[in-house]
Image (cartoon, rainbow over all chains, first blue to last red; front, side, top):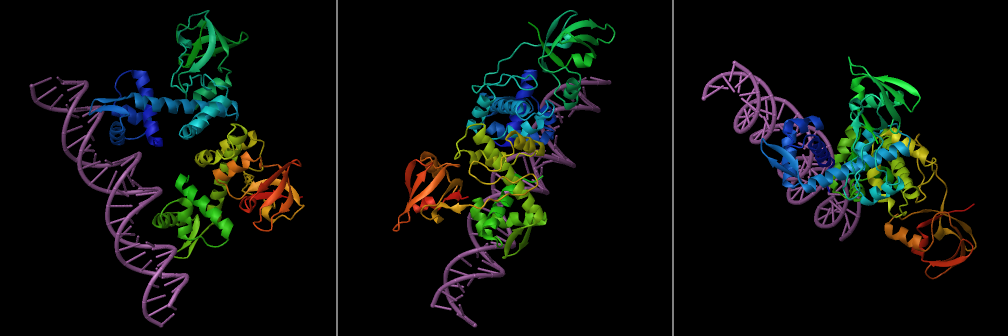
Length: 219
Length: 219
DNA sequence: AAATATTTTTAGACATGTCTAAAAATATTT
DNA sequence: AAATATTTTTAGACATGTCTAAAAATATTT
């Protein structure tokens, strides 16, 4: 149907669009795709010809419904595969992305449906990101940044902002994994670092930089 | 490392080589790859430059050790994925090939090793074909064609020659699946069709055409 | 508003893999 | 062995996706 490259462009544009809400410019796509602006312009024309996005020269781009559908399907596949790799094959949560980046392009609806069922129709991937349903609907849970919680508040670690391996490994090492309960003990007024209680027993001190990248579900 | 296309050529040449033992000519590769002889010549040159095969103009081709290694790795991946699809995702044995054809090109040694372990280091795929080990060694079991068994002989259905969906579906429908025990009751001298006893209870009549495509392990 | 900086597009090139049509080499028939 | 048939290769083209360098458009500074 669509090439790997096309799917990757659509996915990248979709993610940029979700963040900014506005038309996406050539350079930001080039950044996301690790390619050159000239290449982006070329590809944009192709995707525009295929009615997957709307394009006005020099004005940026936004996905059509058809383009968005493909982007979401690709995200769905990616997150289902990540879940498989983590839950079934025991990959660590910082190891799943690169392989899923390949697996997401396998073309077989039956495969994805059966995988979904095999995994028990998971709602979230190993990083806490929601997995779109086969209908393309994404159930978004309202999460707060740990850095935005006040002293005394508590909640459950439910996602990450930064997805880099370095950050994920740091969290893993310090037991700051999905599902852990946390409580804010003290916020340092000087550097905004936070003292937290993990799982009602362990005390941990984290920087504001870290706190700004952890998503918490409060009840 | 190597492109999908390169891996597919190497796999095709490997399989032709296993069958014939001799140098493989351009046309037979074109047939196996469903492409034109001119395209094969082009690709052969590239693979030859990369030292994956030996090539003499007009004389045909045979794989080097390096080429054979890649071919076997690709076969290993293909058969492990087929096993996964069948055993874990409940694909029928005639449904696994096409998806595995895509999955075999995913590049991650860790993935394949973990998949192998997850599946319990299977020795054979859903069609009874041996799965090469990570060291590239293929354990070949000596099997006989059902059509070559004499009256009164018995054994276990352990493989198929023809891998077409039509044939696999026929076998499935008639209960002629891997692991079933069979005994030759009578061979029709006229058309060489065979009356067999399946699992010591059911009597089935199959044509010689079918018998020539079922592999039996005799003790 | 003119000058300058930045972003985006265009033009032309290249790599990979494919093809058709014609030429060359090899195999088979007479 | 010459004629014919078949197989293989070559030449030149095309599609996809990428790039560099230059041109064009837009945004920002003065």
